[in-house]
Length: 315
Image 1 (cartoon, rainbow, N blue to C red):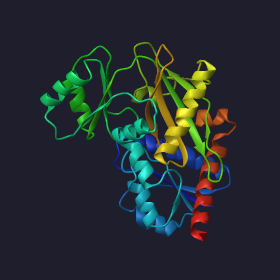
Image 2 (cartoon, rainbow, N blue to C red):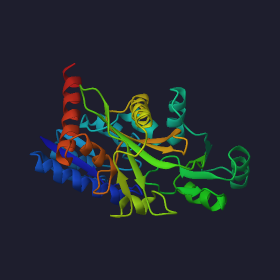
Image 3 (cartoon, helix red, strand yellow):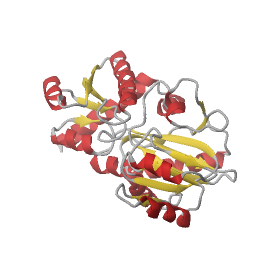
């Protein structure tokens, strides 16, 4: 089976994407697939039509690869692909839209304030202080890898944090919640029941958090698996991860991020529809705890996409 692994593009996460794509491509070739990386550029259509892959694996992070744009493009060209469809990818990528769906489904989310990139900064600062207080987290609506995110656990320079986030487009502001950084992946292979990975706690050095550097620099974070939480809390996190995945209508894979406070109260932050596949990424660690080596994982994801496409084409 021929597999095109999409990488790069115009996203600020393009280099992370290329790292994921390299790992995916190597693992697929090790498993007997004929895999090759294809850059997300102006030659993409020409290259895909010439290469005629059976499945496309979007190892992409951030827009336009993760927000439904590439998914719609692949559907127009009638290529089978790994991951969520247009709508589920778009909802997952837009944090405020996803939060509304989660809240409607009864999932535990924090309050939030959405800010347009054309909004008046002074008015926004006043709205944040009035609505959420001084201790906030400011993040882009449609970006990943913690790019543009500022944590203000003790208050601080909201203006600069807003300007940094607005450089990526619309912004979501949430109250800062003290607690442990937790994540849980979902594996949802076609024709099988979706299953949650064992829950992982992410730790970093004192006075640091899981920012871009700590995500991708070797040794800058630790993945504790299973997370040292009470079993009822672990079960709750796994259940929320599965429900959030289903709520968005995702397929194949996802990874939900949480904060768990000192009272073991769980808050769902967001869901990543195309989790990273780099050497320091969390999703492969969770899959390994389920018994999937990395080559077995990416092979299963490609096979899932191929089987789904075959079912739809024969319907």
